[in-house]
Structures are given as C-alpha cells and as structure tokens.
Image (cartoon, rainbow, N blue to C red; front, side, top):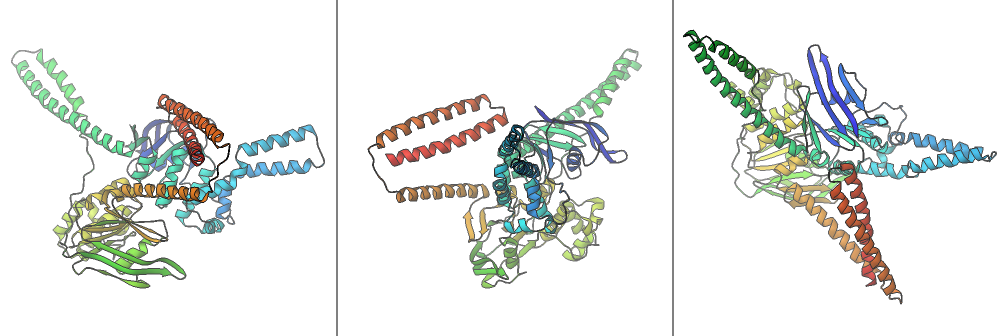
Length: 620
C-alpha cells in the first residue's frame, strides 16, 4: 500500500530557478527512507510542503486516507504557561477528552440507569482501554527517559527550554502521538549517544512510515532501507542504506563517465567520417552528403550529454612535528566541578604518541570541560595535568571564532598565520576556498566553512597533538567528509569529543567513555567498544541469574518429576512455534512490516522459553 506519493513536484522561491524541478517518488507503508542531498537542495522544503506549511507551484501529492504526518523540525507554539509535561500530555489530548466524557457519564449514571447510558459508558470505556488510556503515564515516562528529558525539565516552562531541548520534547510528543508517517529533519542534532541509540531502537520497532533527513551517517545506516537523493530538483533512487548509497552513487558516476568517454570517442570518429564523406561528395559522389548530414545530426545529439563531475577531494597534509618521548598527556587525581556539582574526580589519564582517543559520554558529563582543562582554558579543582616537553598542541573548538569577523578568509590567513599571499591562497585552495570565495568575510561563512578555515590555519603549524571538540557537529555530509579528508593523513596524536559514530569508528583507536563513575578506558574502535558493552551486559545478567538461583533454597517435592514433565511439553510447544515463525520469516522475506511483527512475536516467545528453561533447570 502506498502511504505517500509525490509526482512532478515543482517549487521555486526565485523566478526562473526551481529548487524542486519535477521531483517524483513514492513510499510504501512501513518503509524507512533517507532523504539526501547537499544543503540547499530542497530537502527541508519538501518536508514543509508535505505538512502543508508552504504551497507548491506544480505537481501532485497523495497521502493515504486516514494517515497522519508529523514533522519533528516544526515546533508548535504553546500557551505561555505550558510546562514540558503539559506538552507531553498534549500528545494524549484525545484520551483526556475521552476520560472527561467517561467521568461525566459516571456522574449522570448516579441518577440515570438507562440501558442507552450504560451502553455508551461501556463503549467509551472500551475505547479508552483499547487506545492505551491506562498506559499513558507509563508511555510518557518511557519516552521521556529514553530521550533524556529528566523530571526537573518536565516541570520547567516549555518556553524556557533551549532550542535543542525543545526539539527533544517535540520528538517525544510526536512519538507519543503514534503518528503514522514520521518526517524527521535532523533528529539527532541535539541528542547524545544514549538518546540517539534509543531513537534508533524505537524506529526499528515503529510500525509506521519514516522519512529522515540526517547528516548522521551511522544513524542512516541503522534506520533506513532506501535512499532518495535530491539533485538538481529531481529524485535519484537508491535501494539500500547510506553505505549502499555511497558505493552505488560512485558506481553510477563511473558508468556515466565511461559512457561520456565512449560518446566523445564516437563523436571524434563520426566527425572524421562526416568530413571524409563531404570531401568525397565534392569529388562527384553527391549521395554521400546526405549520409554526412545524418552523421552530423547524431553528433549533435551526442554533444548534448555533459561530462559528469564529482566533488573534489581535499589533498592536504598537516605540518606535523615529530614526537620524541612517551608522554603526550598525563593527569593524576584530576577533579573538576561547578558549585555543588562535581563533574568528575580522581581521573587518571595517560596518552602516548600516535594514539587516537575519542572522548564520548552523555550530555552534561563534562566532556568539553575536560578538553578545556587539557588546553589550559580551565583550572582543575584538584590533581594535576601536564603535556610532554616535546608536545605542540592545537585546538579546534566546537564553536569556531576568529579575531576579526569582518576580515576575509584570505586576510585572516595573512594576519593570523603570518604567511605569504601565495602560500595563503595555496592552502585555502587545498581546503576548498577558491576564486572569489577567499574574499568572503569569515563572519558570513557557514559552520562547516568556518571549521574548514580553522583547520586550514592549524595545518601550517608544526603540531603533534590535535584536539577537536565536536568537529562534525551541525555539518552536512559533504562538510563532514571534507574534515575527514583533512584528518585522514594526520599520523600524530588525536583527541576528540564527538557524537558522530561514523567519525569515531573511522579515527578512534581508543575510547574514553566519561560517566558518573569516572572514565572507562577501552583500547579499540567504537564498534569493538559497543560489542564489549553488550558482552558486559550479558555477563552481568548471567551473574545476577546465578546469584538469584543461589539465593533460592532448593527443595524437592514428590511432584517434581510431574512438574518437570509438564515443563518439557510446554518447552516443546514453544520450540515448535518458534520454528513456525522462522519458516514464515523466510516466506515473508520481502515484507518488512510483516518481518517486524514476526520478530516481535519471536522475541516474546524466546523470553518465555528462557523462563521455562530456568524453571526446568531448577527442578532438575
């Protein structure tokens, strides 16, 4: 069943320039779609059109009858007195209205016991139960905890929240509303790793349709089945997640390039042949003119195809200073807090040359504060921290600033880096600042451009310890890849804070997970760290099970054998049901929604089977 269909959609904000120019695609029920494209390609414009926020010029949009759309980037205006809890409760407003009707009927029934009134009361009560009225509070707590909306924030005025906090609350409201078609515009921008992973798990089990605009490549890989790239106002379709899109896009580019090269070779061949035929025609073979003209028309058609182009990759290299010695960074008994709140205490840190450390953790655990201690911007409350004597460090902050925002990128390089004009231009060109772009005031640059310019400035320094704070935050995918290209050949010590798991996996050889109990120091990449966490969870659960069994006093009863026999029969039945589900999963291999239902049913049966095995083991 088609949930959403867009046909020949056209939208322009400037006369003669269409941001959407014949966009067409369709989405079936239950699909997870990633909407890709460079900044300004029309992704957010498409979402605003779908929810009716703006109109379009031409084309057709079809939304399946009865389906409700919800857009995360669109934060409604609530009454000034509304708290965060009021906003969350607004998702269940229809259930509260239903509850009020039931309460009114209950009062009326004190004086009127007519069958019609009783029947209406029963009907509304059943509707309230069926729609989840008795689970409202549990659902609110589950979603709020998952998206890191603590009780204190729920009591706050909604208007007093930051933009990121409002986005999280709005996402929670949409989830609680049980919207049929979710439109997510950069949903992970203001989420830490814990909340992002919770959202991924929610979407994997969400039975509705999801369209996602995101620059989080790991998130796209985990949550989308198909990608739609908006390029030159039209839709390019890819039948896989982000990693598939990257490979398939490159394959299509190479195929187009080969076709273009074949066309050019054919043009050259036909041109020579047409010239020869015209020559022969002048020598008395008049009929050859007609064949030559036919060839020239074919040449005109072939010449209409443009040479495919791809974004240029950075070819830069940091001026690295060779490191001598073992100690890059040492901390002993490091503590820091603000007021009565202690962020961390008694940290022991040691970093040696060439290591690549990713500092991760939930929002508010003190990651940026720790970086500021390392760079000297903040002083510790206790303990000490020092760099090795041969260390030359450089710092890329989360919010990049310059000494004078009115200066151009070129002038900033000349003044702050003390380099010659030609060297400044060469380095700027290597980081994508070419032509008139070098004269753009740095205050007018985008976030990604500012980060690129700052890295360009750092590149000229002889450094062996590079410190980055959220280097890819709020950047589009192209800008993230620019940053990664710049860092790919840097071989010295790297320490960075990031929520971008794709970036972490690419660069980290060591993970520092900062939490309430200090730092967990893991030697390995992000995926290895996640697998280690899963193993730790399994070991902890196994240990709890052993302790539970040890605590239970074993008793033998005359009926133990009969009880064990009954359990074995129940176990056999459950195993048979699970085998049937496995067979059905193969039958419905292409039906994503059915597979999710079967997976959920199998998980419940697996859990029940595990409990029966534990009981059987106790009886044995």
